[in-house]
Length: 398
Image: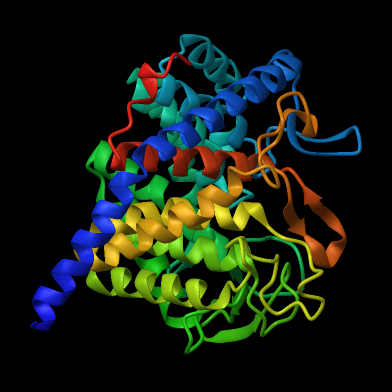
């Protein structure tokens, strides 16, 4: 048997094995959405008239944030995702209410996180409503974001605090999608050009030989590297789990918008590194791959959800054999997240969907708790999986 035929047989086998599981997968997605619907409905009802957003919960206490927090877009984003998957107009109504609470966010120039905040709220609203308010918000947010770009350095500044000269974090890759999208919507190439420059600088300086990423790279004014370190990971040289997921997702989306092969190659390298490094039996990573207390270290369901969503997009960009591998890996992650260990029981866990995420372990902050962004990327991954497997969630009676 030739190598080509052998690969083809393997792909057919993987495809058929996945097809055999479609009924189980439909049941899993149905159950996940039922839980998510109950939880989101209760959480949105509690905060409908509030000026703050629930970011996390622990032992009966909510960790609330104002509209200018980097996580403020995830509650409206999750409501939009649920509406898109089920067609339940009650969730669209709630999504519009929570999106409107962010009306002042697009004009904030002191944060790099406008993509998280605005694309996930106004961006999803625009895709559903095609309204001028959302488009204006996206353009305004993009204008605010590119003001943080320095031509000499070739990157968007992340933070305005700390002793770094010009810090750029791997998380910032996630905010480039808004720039690419607005460039398409307006026909203005400036937003795209900034996004590409930032991606190129990150590709050049953020990654180690094994495709793992530093969390923070700071630059001198002439564009040379000042330092490479961590802020949320175990150590400067460790593999902070969510940071690796941000990199995978970020370069996957960059390839989608540019078709630049080196972005795809980098995404593939990161995916392979994650698959090789995450050795937990359930495929859910510990918060940092190098925490010496493993296997007793906290898990991070948010990193797993981001990874699964990214893999389900990456699968459509590569060969059939590689695509089948990434689909199967994403399904393995989502199957674990859908189990009793990670998926909330209705009415529990502060009405969040997933358990066992980790926010910032070095600061003893948000350890082994639900996080609103974990829920968002979990729902996005379920949406991508249902589309891939042609599961019509709007006919599930949800």
